[in-house]
Image (cartoon, rainbow, N blue to C red; front, side):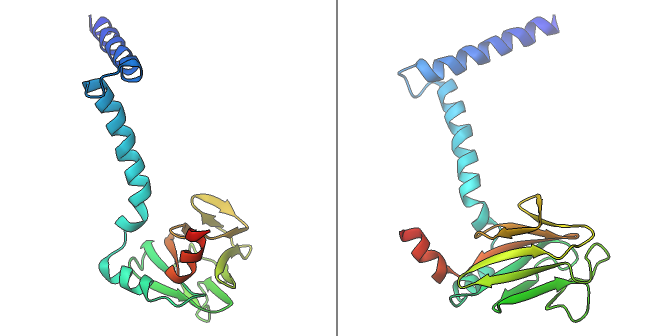
Length: 172
């Protein structure tokens, strides 16, 4: 009996879905459900970057000069730490002389580097043991986009480009 209830419920859901696409009445419950689900998902994707930024971080990002960027630790031992990228090459690793020192055994001594190309930044893995990840994919090198996640060992860092450098891109 439970199987027939599921079949009926599934059948009603499929009919409701078809009705949402064929009905001229945009107020029906089934069209609201399918439309609302998409709207929430789209809004979450569009607002994901801003939702993780505190007011203090927003101010720091807004103050970035052209040709610089900010990395914010989102997960890992230093959650909340911020690192300014304002040189042509910034080395990240567990070695005390690294430009960005990440003290954890999951991080190689010289793990990765951030390379500035005028107003754009690239991350390069330096043959690390655990790899460098860009938006969840292991990479050797990747061009960074605003809001991208870079994982180095246990650390998950979010990349924020200078807003002064994003404005020309948005107008093109």
